[in-house]
Length: 85
Image 1 (cartoon, helix red, strand yellow):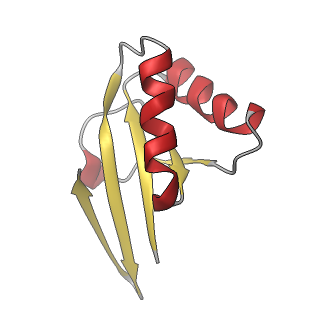
Image 2: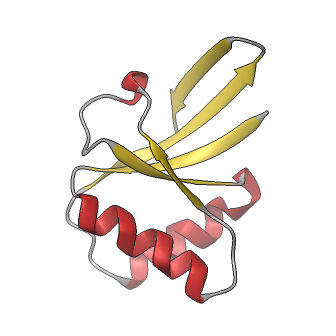
Image 3: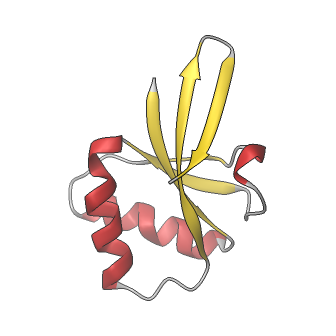
């Protein structure tokens, strides 16, 4: 399984991005930020990797000041790999 997370240092901005997905009829989820993603507020927005261009457009539309980065998460059984993109 592969998915993308958007990591912020602000919980408010994390929730704002999730609401942008929801208000546009797109699926996203709030998850605990993997420790491999570095310092963050503790929660991230998870979405399908095909939605990365949409997420980038959302970030351009509003000046998110606490955006830390996008990360690709690979799950293979009990192994989780996190890669900054």
